[in-house]
Amino acid sequence: MVPWIGKWFSYPNEFKKAFAANREQQRKLVSHLKETLDPKMCRGFVDAFWIHQDNLEKSGITTSHFHNENLLITIMNLFVAGTETSARTVTWGLFLMAKYPKIQEKVREELSSVVGNRQVQFKDRTELPFTNAVIHETQRLTAVAALGLPHRTSQDITFRGHFIKKGTAVYPFLFSVLSDESKWEKPYTFYPEHFLDKDGKFIQRDAFMVFSAGRRVCPGANLARTEVFIFFTTLLQHFRITFPPGVSEDELLLSPSDSLILNPSNVKLCAVPL
Ligand code: HEM
Image (cartoon, rainbow, N blue to C red; front, top):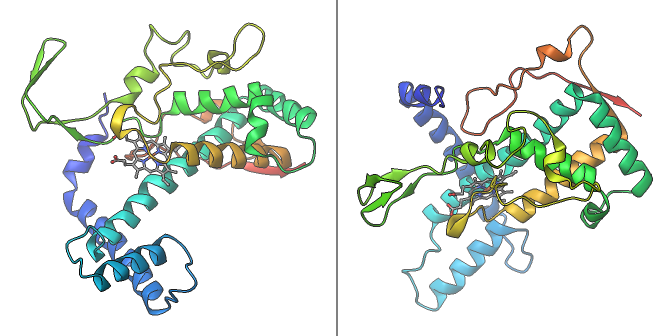
């Protein structure tokens, strides 16, 4: 189902090297922030972490989770989980707008009639059902985090007739629910109508699980929804997204490049100012 995943295991050294380089980059960033820390002026998450750690140490608590290793890993998690996912969702959205110019025009018309020339705000979403449906459909079809993250079974369990031993790593393969033929009218087609009722009103769908579900559902989902909505709509307000000259719409394939967070292959798009 996901043949590219084999490559991750074929090149473990490449993976380890990339991880080590990333870690070194974050370490430098954190050291710089520590050197320039002013406890009276908190600049963000890392400063808040240091200040809290310092307070705990001053009160004699040395066994908390606020230690350097946790800080580094948390920052790496936030960068990986919080930037690639949202950025690639917007990239896919623009890619699909180039591939489906009539849908792009319909989004722009809705934006123009509801928002006009002012800056889009997240609360406008309720008045923009078609645009909202296009963004949801982009996320459904392209499933940037198709594989979810690994979980581990906390006990022996039999699931749909399959015995799974305690401690087994399991992946919530989200692409399966996002393309389930019993849930979606046209699972493999870009079809914003999946999220619209017959009167053109936006509808939520239970099978829309791009952020996974349950206790480990993506904690950044609300931030991601806001970011994706604001970036996508603002770009479409100001630019027409087209293919580069000489590239036909058929050449823009929906198959993603090999990666844990799925990205369109070899995309080059033009943003023409309006
Ligand atoms: C379109 C954007 C995003 C998508 C599609 C997405 C999707 C996901 C998915 C599928 C998971 C795995 C959940 C599971 O284990 O079952 C996850 C986990 C996570 N996401 Fe997101 N995410 C997005 C944006 C963000 C943002 C903006 C942040 C934070 C700034 C974030 C932070 C995290 C973290 C920290 C986890 C791990 C949670 C844990 O291990 O319990 N994500 N995300």
